[in-house]
Length: 211
Image (cartoon, rainbow, N blue to C red; front, side):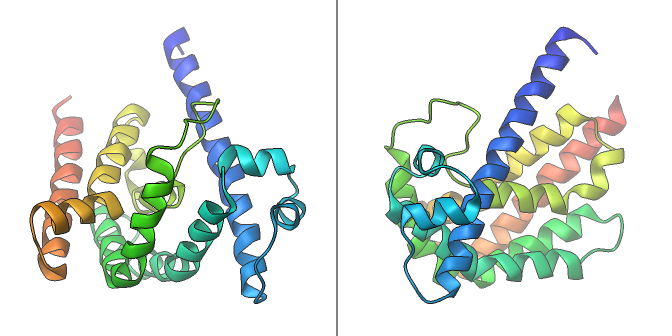
């Protein structure tokens, strides 16, 4: 492995570790919310087994953290179940399509909250650690999970690029573009998103086959 590849692998590893830490904080918050109370930062830190400082490093405000956890409550199981139900063993395209359809089904509930979360994060100072995700870690996990069958067909760089490409067409930001800039309704939004995702997957596979 070259020095460049080693450096890239280390950066990817750091990103994934930060994403796991963020997910652990949100998961702890979600469990506390399920109990019917609004937790404090201290209670969340204790439940996630991290320091208060770590919580604030990922979530500058408690409002942002509670909003992220609430979005998880609305969408997590629905999307996970959809990917599992579409698991044909090697059909990544169908797994991604199932993920997109599940997200579309809950978008009426989640998009207003997603807009609020974007407002809270888009102008916030970037974390000192550039590998720390500002938002969207849950979406990336879903995309990676849906694309799992392609790990033997695409090299690491191509797979990471495909994940990044799908992250641009799946999620609240893409829905906001389709709704606000294009004036599309839910069915048209779903159709365009599925078309874009399939095109990206097909292009990645075609490129891999041409090498």
